[in-house]
Image (cartoon, rainbow, N blue to C red; front, side, top):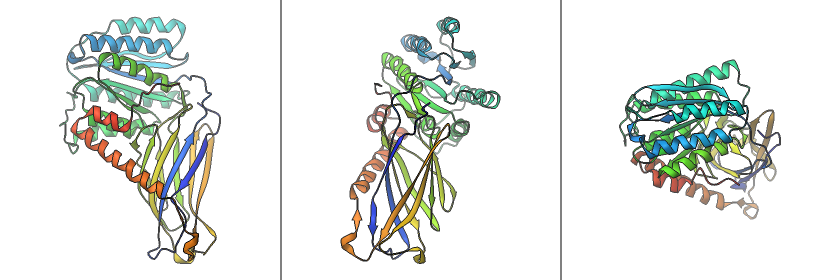
Amino acid sequence: MSKKQPYINILQSAICIPIPSNNEVPIALDIKVLPDKNIPPEAFYGIWLLDISGSMSGKPLDNAKQSLIEQINILPEGTIFTLITFETNIHEIITNERITDNSRKKIIDEIQKISDRGTTALYSALKKAIELMKKYVKSDNSLKIKKIFLLSDGDPTDVELESGNENDPNYNKYFLLAKEALEYKSSIDTVGALGDHNVYLMYELAKRSTGKYIFAESEEEMKTKMIIATEQTVRIAFSQPQIIIKSYHQELQLDDAAQYKPTVIRMPFKKVSKTEFQTYLRSFEAGDTYQILIKGKVIISPNKIQLDVPTNLLRLEFDFGEGLTDSKDIKIQFSNDSSKFKLNQDINKKYANVFSQAEEIADCTIRGDAQATQRIQGDETKKIS
């Protein structure tokens, strides 16, 4: 990961405003983060979950295996590799194998033996991956980047779900696993392959763990996108950075937050207290541009308001890991002189547009429209430079 502080710039919608009549100060922030682009590929702890059910037979499985072999050849030495296949049962093909010139051939030999069979025990496979992740974090944790790659082309058959019904209580069983992954600083990249995968499940597993949802329309695209997802992982500059937002006043209310560059995805904040919120962001990759919109309001006491002087409103604390932190204060000025008022309406327009897209993505995932989801959010496996 990068040892260099990223560039951070924050624009705000209001700089100078009239005194609020209801003690509520609206806020809209546009945060830009630029990680260093000059970082070498880095080893990581990775678990690959490969669907080998009957629907993957033939070209889909052949391409998935070939993709895995190519990924093995580009993984940096020192990467710890685990491969679990799942059908009606789950199989630990390779467990915690450290990548070396000698181990690559052993792993490739095991990949070439894989054949299709059975149904789709996706829940069991993901649960096993989380168990292995926990053991690694508690016993070693020397590799700071931790990733689970999940590829499937169908609906789970072990803990079944009702497609199109996001209120099916069984979804929560899967989402608890995504939450556990996040607690252990691991994200889940999901590859929805080809036809009838559960788009809502795969998208939400990725989103809730700060991972990526990737859609592959063909066998060849699946092969390529799996490779690119691995290439992107070894170029991570900051793994799951955090933002903590603190109010200098009596209460903070956040309406919503979303990343809109390089792709569109809603980023939920956790309420820590009346004056503090926290979120984990997507991992930042070397040389990319990340922009995040946040909207809410600060409740401020009238006796804290001073006219025509900058007033501290919020403090944003960034934690990029490896001891790299930064903080930014958001100030606002109150005035009775309308000629001094300064508003950036472009941020509010951008907010409306981004969150309209986020709502449309949510609707598309529930309807199972993978093509529309990827078209609106952007392709997570754009070619890296």
